[in-house]
Each structure stands twice: as C-alpha cells, then as structure tokens.
Image (tube, rainbow, N blue to C red):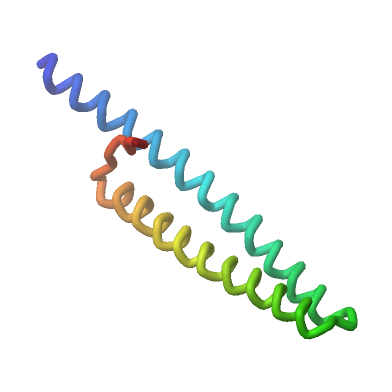
Length: 92
C-alpha cells in the first residue's frame, strides 16, 4: 500500500511540475511572439539601411527558430500530461 501511495505522490508531483513548465513555456512563447510583432512593425515603419534591415531579419529568424523549438517542447509536455505519463524533469 505504501508503495502505491508513493507512486501516486510521485505522479502528482510530476504532473504539477509539468503543468507549471507548460504555463511558463506558454508565457515565454507569447512574449517572444510580441517581440516578433515589434520587429515586423519596426521593419515596416521606418527607413532602414541595408545593414539594419539585415540585423532585424536575423533577429526575426532567430526568434522564429526559438519559438518553434519552444512550441515543440510545449507540445511534448502537454502530450505527456494528456497521456497521463508525466515525469519529473531533471535539469543537469
């Protein structure tokens, strides 16, 4: 019986941990999307030199890659939660 309770406790802790991570990832992605919108506005609203436009394009591309990676992570975390298979995330 104790082993079952311990397993349930671990499962609940893991689920809380992953739910917290999902919320943090969602917030981070939303913030990065706002930054992306700001770059689009900045690029469209002012006269920019070629170098400045290149820097904005590079920032935009980096943001897009970061958002895609975080979206993948969020999808994986949500999938594990939905499957009922959360695990405690270990940071090395």
